[in-house]
Image (cartoon, rainbow, N blue to C red):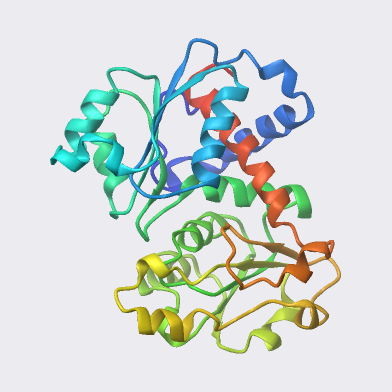
Amino acid sequence: MVTGRHLIEPKDFSIEELEGLFALAGRMEEQPREWRDAAKGKLLASLFFEPSTRTRLSFEAAMLRLGGSVIGFAEPGSSSAVKGESLADTIRTVSAYVDVIAMRNPKEGAALLASRFSTVPVVNGGDGGHHHPTQTLTDLLTIRSLKGRTEGLTVGFCGDLKFGRTVHSLVQGLARYPRNRFVFVSPPELRIPDFVTKEIIDKGGIEYLETEDFEKALPELDILYMTRVQKERFFNEEDYLRLKDSFILDGAKLRRAKADLAVLHPLPRVNEIAVEVDSDPRAAYFAQVRYGMFARMALFASILGVA
């Protein structure tokens, strides 16, 4: 049971608990009307100290579809943070009003700090380049739904692997399942961080490959997880401009891939996936968005004890 629990990073929940959430999300997708009053009278605080479209709206849609309500802000400029209020004081205050908090903050460790001061469960919606556990729930649910399993897969991650918190979290999530293998495709400047390879992959004895040869890597992949080069993580615009078009998936490259490849992307997309790919049946990134809402519905229902 995850009732009353925080979700700060993917490993906070056991495999059995994750599987329970995925099964619940499946039931919600099949019979959404049965859950429309499940969280009636419950209140979510949506605290976004960093811009977001999908994650924020997905959290809010999930709570509303469960019959709950939402308060909060979509940017720090509309909160007392601009007056110098500490995160601890903001969380102490907001947790007095609500039943659960979903928060995004550009600083690594912010969600963990918030959980120490909150009197209600805190769900991490992304903390800097660190973790994004509800995106990991989304990604695992998508993979499970499309492939029928979350083990024995060759998963390619392409693009910004250095700053990509969704990548770090999904690697941690998939590393918990047996016989998965990883292929990391990136320029040297954006390679997967050592804390991921040493603390997660090497400790788990997981096979992986780092390469700059995107086309050579494609044919062996079961899952391709594309990411954008994140302009907001760069201090030097020249470096961003030099790296932003390093790898682009288009129809020609996709012809080299397996017929049952699933192409995922946490979105937003810039130009790393050509629009022509959208019509390919292997493009699963917009289906992934829908799975994300059901994953968050299952999470809220479970945390609030209404499932």
